[in-house]
Image 1 (spheres, rainbow, N blue to C red):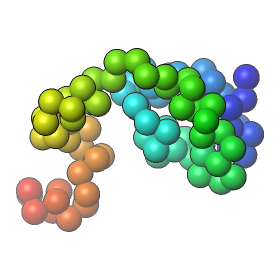
Image 2 (image 1 turned 60 degrees about the vertical axis):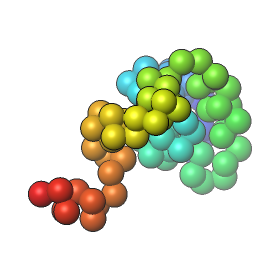
Image 3 (image 1 turned 120 degrees about the vertical axis):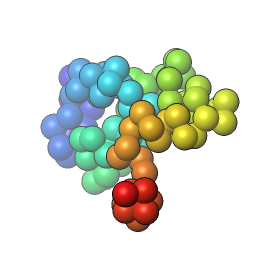
Image 4 (image 1 turned 180 degrees about the horizontal axis):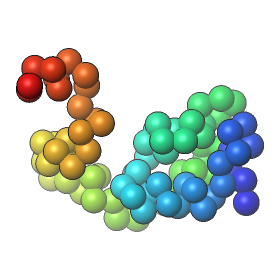
Length: 85
């Protein structure tokens, strides 16, 4: 079933990205562009993501932002990567 008709994103694609670690509609949008055009699919994406366990969210809630950033370097802003090099 299509979740985002603007970009042709299916519920299966959203589930695959969620299984790979995307925990929020913003992270799904980053990976697929879903939710960035008209926005009507954001609630459906939220529903698919649910309120289940999310490794990143759990680490952030425990105050382990460094562990989250280490797990996904794409979350680090470009200037921070340049400084680290």
